[in-house]
Amino acid sequence: MPLTTYTAGQVLTAASLNANLSFAASSGGLNLISTTTIGTTVASVTVSSAFSATYDAYKIVVSGGAASASNFLRLTLGATATGYYAGIWDVSFAGATGATGQANTAFWLFGCGDVDGLSAISDISMPFASDQTTFTSSSVALKTTEFTRIANGYLNNTTSYTAFTITASTGTFTGGTIKVYGYTNS
Image (tube, rainbow, N blue to C red; front, side):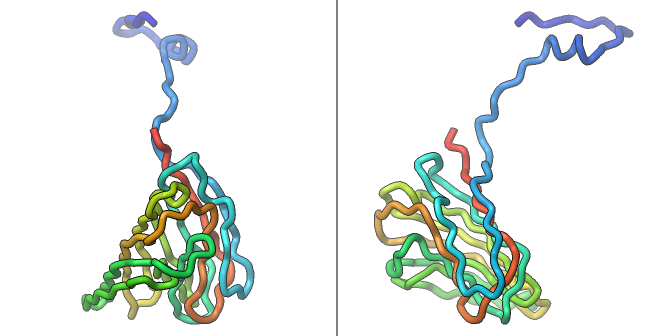
């Protein structure tokens, strides 16, 4: 398309500008796949049809709602209850730090729950592919005396997954949402 030259003092209208603009399709970003509303006093929530061949990497965001007591949110892929590995770093709001690990456990520590809300943001890579799945997660315990948590790990198998489950380590949770986004491949 030839470029139009405008002169000083010329009044531009939407019609004259639109005739000379071209738009390209977006080649990146996040696409919302699903939003799941968490029920009332549930111990776990399964999100089905979360992963597919359309995306290689996903973002899972848990927010809102509340837990019946301070707890941790656990993440499992499909029905797999073994082979989860992770390194976990906690930093308290008072500045103290600690590190723990998970070796061949039944879940990943994924987020935090409290009477003031639920918190988890995670990136999951290759859950649908027949490859080892990796994850990173960050969360905040919503109390002034608590901490932030970062976890990184992988699942030691090459199973293809379409669903995941979030479970409270103790008690239940109510309300809030679980949003799943896919990272565009191109």
